[in-house]
Every structure is written in structure tokens, then in C-alpha cells.
Image 1 (cartoon, rainbow, N blue to C red):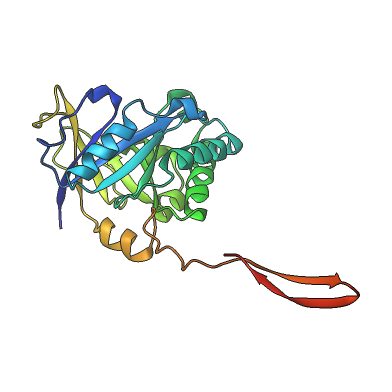
Image 2: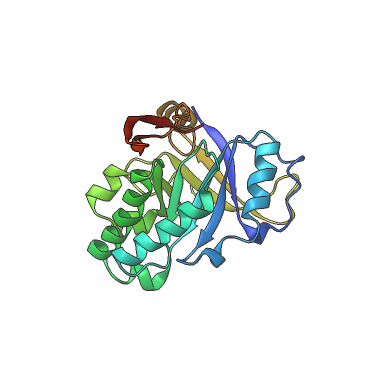
Length: 232
């Protein structure tokens, strides 16, 4: 199974989602560790894709230089995603040169810290990196543990030899509804089936409404009454 998709951010400007034809879209939610770094068009792009019936994923561009910073970025990312549903993974985008310069072990620790925070909160998390970076700057644990979205442009197939569920194959795609270039992707995994079936990424069934109750003991005119009071 191969699905054709795109990924977008504020750099694509105002997208006319009524004209977009694609199997899926991965939307940049933001970057860094502050809520003010939400992608300026994230809300609009999410609403537009949903209104057009296009399954969505999201990604967060990382500047984290430590595991603690990665966890802080993850918390902000989840705040931006709150209340939304995504049929495709939530990816951590690791390509900042000062981060990559930390080396394989530290980069891998940062990646694991971010992605595990998402997983612990009910998200299906994945990693976006170039083929070279995946090969040389991540441990086998990272490669095997998380969903991989590999970037490798204008080649018959990625040079990355590990397993991957999605491939970003070009940065120069053209598609109706978007002015200028857009990234083109292929997906080989049935992420919607897995994510929706597992109740991840906001798809968990809301639990039945449970009224709170308290045990109470009250003395009135010398008589003691006890029982349970339920919330209306």
C-alpha cells in the first residue's frame, strides 16, 4: 500500500484546501519550546485539511540541546495539538545543525526523551530526519523503536537502509491550491488503521460521564446523618 501526500507549514502561505487533492498531509505544528512558536498557519491548515476530508499528521521542529529541553518542547507541542485528531503520526523534526553536532548518543537521547513524552500522553510518535542523519546520528534503538519518516530527494529510493514508514522524496512538488513548491511524500504503512484502532492521537473513545461523589456525615439537632452525596 502506497499513499501519496504532502507536508506543509506557514511557508506555503494561504492554502486553498478546497482545491488540494492528496491522500494525506503532515502539518507543522510549531518549533522550539515556547507556545508562541506555534506555526502561524497551523490552526488554519488543520481546519482546512479536516474540512477537505484529508487525513492529517503533524510535526514539531526541534532546537532541543538536552533531554530536559526535549521534554519541554514535547509539552508545548502537545499543548498545541490538544483537542485535535491526527490519523498520521506526530513527528519530531531533527535537522538543526547545532543539535546534530552533539553526536549520535546525545542526539538519540534527545529524540527518545521527546518521543516518549508524546507516547506517554497517548500519541503515536515518529522521527523525521535525512537519510544521512538517520544512518549516522541515531542509535539502533531509535531506528527500531520509533516510526521513521526519511528525507532523501530526487533519488529512486532512499539511501537509508533501515525500515521506514514514510519517505519525503522531493521539496519541489506542485499541487493545486498551493502557490509555489511543496514537499512530496510517500507513505507505506497504514497509520490511520493503527492509530484510530489504538485510540491514539485524540481518537480514544471518551469515557462515560462519571459523576463525582463524596461521603458525608452531618449532625443536626443532636441527630447524626451519614451517606453519599452525588454530583448533579
